[in-house]
Amino acid sequence: MKNLRTYRILFFSLFLSFILFIIGCGKKYEVEIVGNWEETPMTDKPVNTRVWTFYDDNSMKIEETADTVYKAEYSLEKKFNFHFVTISNLERGLLFNGKYRIDELKDGILKLQRVELENGESDGAYLRKEFIKL
Image (cartoon, rainbow, N blue to C red):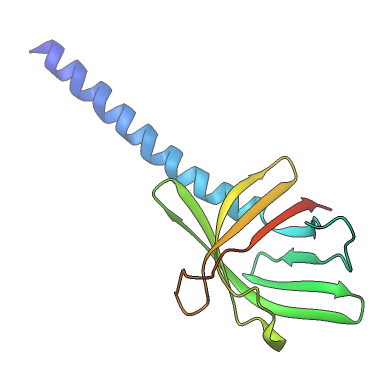
């Protein structure tokens, strides 16, 4: 009888630790994504470099030059083992709205892959973005 009680306590402790770990990992992304991120060009002769800035109030901006700044909103979510950032209400019709899977967010590196367009369609949604934190 004493062994059964010990196993129950051990199981409950491990389960509670797992839940706290999962909750804590979600907060990490909310903190780490905030800041300025320089987009890494995917071509050998980039035309311009964009800086994406995420704020802690879920607003953001994409800056191409000092004179060209686009404002938007973002939200973070976690589904199973994946984290996602959804960019919406991007002004001036840039083609970056949609849901992105966060493939990497650590050590000053951010890798995003769009998996859904703004309207929820996945056909033609592919867009890969990689950034270095400034």
